[in-house]
Image (cartoon, rainbow, N blue to C red; front, top):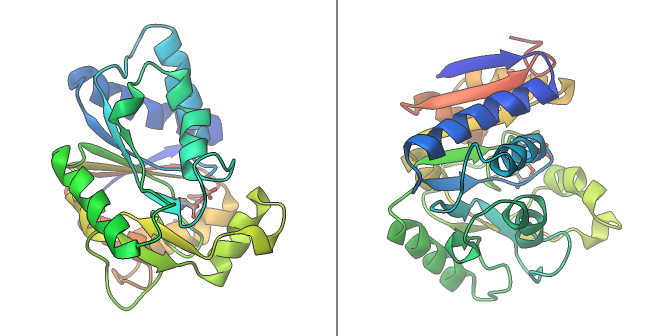
Length: 241
Ligand code: GLP
């Protein structure tokens, strides 16, 4: 595990963007695993600026997103489909036909999970997986549990995750209670993993996940075992280390 501590959110975002830019420069046809949430937004802004400046290109990149709310149509402005198109895909030269997100509108959850595992398999797995970190240690939407998940699964979101995500919805009752997420096994199969976290609100969980016991009760803790894992955090998130 490599730990990079940046002075603030902007520097964290630039450093994370450096690693993604290097990945797609060295391997233009990379498969990027992408994340939503507020933390990666600065990283995406950096990548958009570098693409506009002609320094990097997504033209040959394939992407697979981590997760999607179950039951939200793509055009709902809280769907992760909408998020990715709005915050990255429409602003870089990526071929949208090569971008993949679990289908939140598929009511048959077993079928949705099976199909998404097939997508990840068919693109040859993930070269670089970008992750954020939930306050309870979730990655993607893999919530604390008795065991680590393997492939794509349909999860019941915990009360704390619903509350944390309520800020994006009109009210807490509008937050979907379930989501489809790539499994921990798939995330661990990515050839490189990059996790971004910032702010004092993440300090406790950063310490627990990356310097504490490896346990499915803190799903991100398994990343300690990944052979090429880089943690990019700001000083506030590193405060308890
Ligand atoms: C959601 C997403 C996660 C994300 C987490 C943290 O639950 N499914 O992928 O990492 O939120 O979000 P934020 O970056 O806004 O703190």
